[in-house]
Length: 146
Image (tube, rainbow, N blue to C red; front, side, top):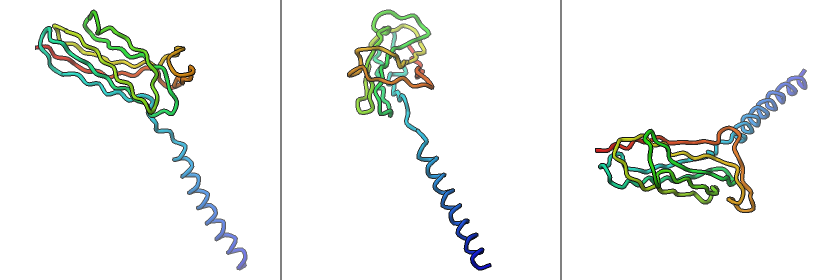
């Protein structure tokens, strides 16, 4: 009878240890790295025909590099530098910064967009990844014209 009690005690300890290991493994397997992080800096208010600069810093927490295309979109038709599109290689240890300078006469909503694209001769040795979940990221900002 005494040996049977020892067997039950050992099984409870073993189950508890196994349960703790499973919990630790589940948390360790979670991938919380962000694919794209965008920081868009621009004034909120400007005067008509005054030059506005939009600065966008793009970062990633992924270990692999990826090809990105960045551009601006607005609810107002714009010509010139506002429509410039930049294609670049984005890596974890090398954030990218992009600038757009333009003038406007009307209040506008601006979307700063980053697309992850498949394009050759951008990243070194053409080594780049494409995420499965999403390949377009954006930040909306409003520019008020006085």
